[in-house]
Amino acid sequence: MGSALIGLAAAVVGVTGTLIASVLSQRMTARVQVEQFARQQQEAEAQWLREQRVAELDRRREGYMNVNAALRRYRTHLLNFLWTVHKGAVTDEAREVVEEARRDHHSVMAEAQMVASARVLAELNGMTRTLSETYRRIMCLEEGRPDLNGSFDEIRADFARIWDEWERLLGAMRADLGVADEPVGLPPVV
Image (cartoon, rainbow, N blue to C red; front, side):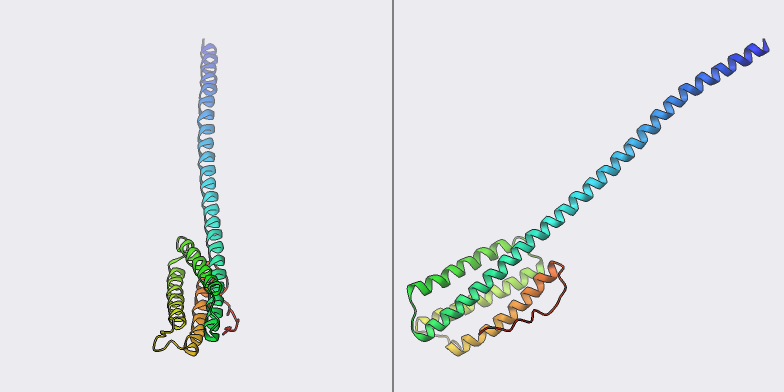
């Protein structure tokens, strides 16, 4: 009977071990799957965040390119209009060209205000104020009622200041995009 009990005990231990092994195996598999799922979730979230950052950078880059182009165009048309006023050759067409550049500038600035960083936004607002004041002074000169400091030469000299402000704005936009801060090196056109 001793060997029968030993055999029975061995069989019970073997069956119990087999049953416990399958339960433990299922639990370990479930734990591994939960960990894999959590890791996949973390990776997916990290990928989504990277894609969001890239998309945001692309939106800012596009906005800043549009701002840069609109500012150059508006500045150029303002300067051309100032020379037209100086020559006494103002036409409705010349006024419309300036107004169109001005409207485009306002539209692009409105879009940029939605994506620009605080530093770039401060520079954008400063540049907009300067261009608005220059526009006002040119229109007063054209209407024959110039400001005290609103002669052709004084307004023309302001375009060098506008260029300096543009370089600061460009530097802020480049820094916001992570571009190395190198001097622009373009001479002002007056």
